[in-house]
Length: 239
Image 1 (cartoon, helix red, strand yellow):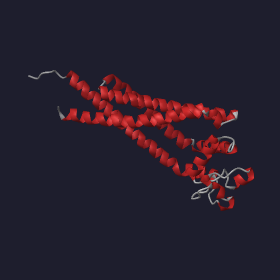
Image 2 (cartoon, rainbow, N blue to C red):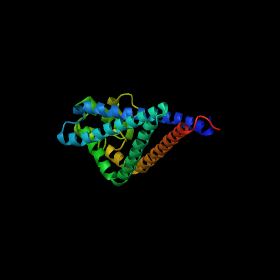
Image 3 (cartoon, rainbow, N blue to C red):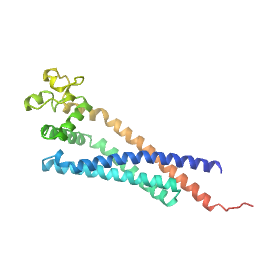
Image 4 (cartoon, rainbow, N blue to C red):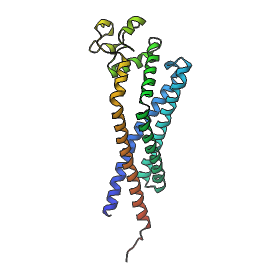
């Protein structure tokens, strides 16, 4: 066994580990998309919301399914040492890599549109708050993540006569004891704008990092395939 074979073996293990990680991530995306789709009537009650949200859900499910498929191909190709599966895996990864380049460009160009969509989504959920547990959980989670309260501010709860969720009162054991005048958190509309302004570059860098990993996996797939083809073509004996 030469150095090339040892290196191919190491790359095979790394390729399997990386694809197991992406398989889990793809499964999470797919599971979340299917769960929200199955419970969609709890999330939105208007036809206008239905169309825009369904498009996003179908994209999420499609991306999750594709990532799961590619990851399975990578694991099988490396474990079974199949040149055919590794070739398919390489081209699927190439498609995914080109798609992520397009997503990065789209984020940079359509940043304002994404911001408006998220803002409109939160506004719709806030208007439906109190009508079902799903909307309440979504609002509470987003307010806790962005450290905000209400759509425009805590006074939204006073004008709409809605219960103040625990996320508006960090450090309080019970949201009922939290008074609106004591809430110092800004409105979520402002936080959403700040989030997109401050994190667009981070998202693009993240996509670039993922793209670099994908290039590495494509290189490893090619190297493993080349090593296996070399072993097949070598004569069993040397004179």
